Length: 205
Image (cartoon, rainbow, N blue to C red; front, side, top):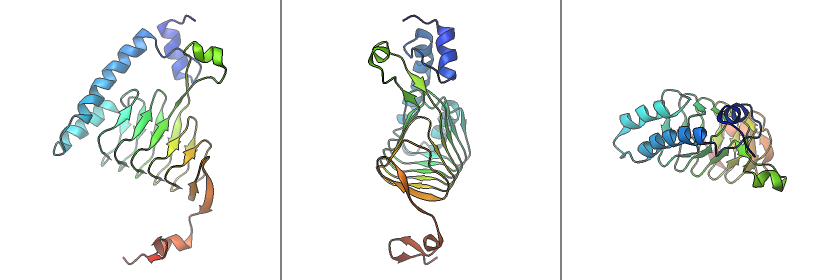
């Protein structure tokens, strides 16, 4: 299958099937990955350098964000939009061929995966190397537990908690605790959560 660079880029941006191995797309990706390499090579005391690199790497990134290296991204976070106060623990992976939108004060546990990219189920199309990208949206004040996976096209509402190891294949509403594979709403966030921070341990502040 043939597809020129202009068509491949247009289809990529529109969430349609395209060829990700296009030469011009790969050149752009390589530049982004150089910045990502530099970020992951920083030393622990180089906070200012990390902040400066993140501003170059991300489509948008707010104040007070802290991302613990290593960070893994297909496009070096070029299509990632983060609000302010986002914290990401070790090994956040974003398959960011499509846009990733993250609100303010979001927390990512270690080894979280966000993927915007997918491939056709039909095998002859897959054999052609075709891909599509569907954006992911995560609201404000969300906590994504360790090892969770967020699949293409998912939206997660404000203040929701996604349990560790969950596989999020469908939209999750705001103000709930959701867990499992596939991830489902376990319960709403309610009055008890204002009294207890973990099981029967009372909030004493």
